[in-house]
Image (cartoon, rainbow, N blue to C red; front, top):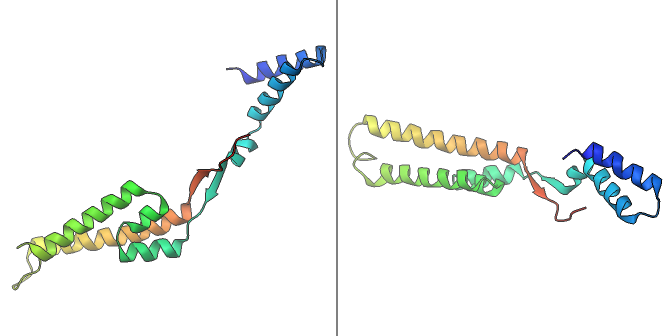
Length: 138
């Protein structure tokens, strides 16, 4: 668990007997562990195209989040929007002939709020990007 101490010990072993290939190998492995830049090489930052994310999120709420890699959030937004659109279109609480009712106004505001949130979150998520493994190890 103490990399610095082990590094010192393997370095001393290599200095004492340069023919010890195992000690030299362990020393090299520990040097790679100490080098934090290697971790940066193992992960790749993949930004997403914000225009595409906003476009597909505006056409299909939640699709931009799925494009950005936030699958659970995207599915939640899709199901929520579909549920609200169902309530608006095919229930007595939705659009019907007559004056505006309180449930109708609340559902319209909720649908609009979810839509705006989905588009803005898709844009922000695309800018943020995600870290992916590079596919190779040192």
